[in-house]
Image 1 (tube, helix red, strand yellow):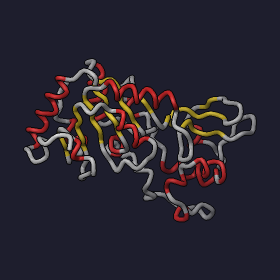
Image 2 (spheres, rainbow, N blue to C red; image 1 turned 45 degrees about the horizontal axis):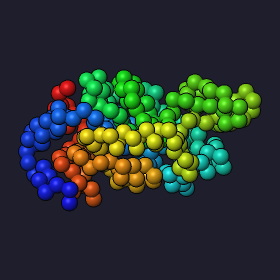
Image 3 (cartoon, helix red, strand yellow; image 1 turned 90 degrees about the vertical axis):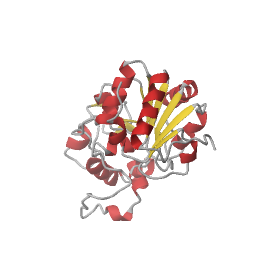
Image 4 (spheres, rainbow, N blue to C red; image 1 turned 120 degrees about the horizontal axis):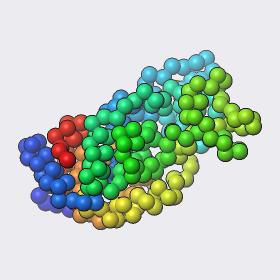
Length: 256
């Protein structure tokens, strides 16, 4: 066990004060976010197939969610892939929430070294965060898989055919790391360096099932760690401060 004095049962305001003190004392903070930040902006969890409508030739019930966002689906069943993408991955209307905004503020006061995220929705950048390490890349770049020409990302939602094509006749794709594809090496190495140099690690800790992103935490020096999750996790014992509350409730109390 990392810390026998873990603050679990203390009053919420006591934990907030402890968290605020840790932030005030730290100068190289790293935040590691999974889907939790974006879901509080009403971005749906991609693993859920709720709110998808079937077409006569696209029956989503036949597929696992992970397959629908995989290299295999993109290249073997592109019609299925792009129909799922259009229904599930359209974040054009989504706005940053209080957590995104607080992280941007923390960066402005030279406390935050990096945000490491699996999210591909660009909401951190919309909130004006600068050092965002997107280890699954982003939906904000769309390119031709043959000639490399880039397109406005809206084309994947406005293209009039089932499958978007380049002028050269080749299929377009978003610059996202899908299942079965390798993570971007620069973003990965930047994340490793940020973690090794950080003095406070704050994580929205979900199930940590997505490999290899779930291995990044091994590079942290285990100085101070704050875990925020609505539910208990197998990693709670590592926390100096533990919150089983929503992100907006925690970050709404912090002042930078």
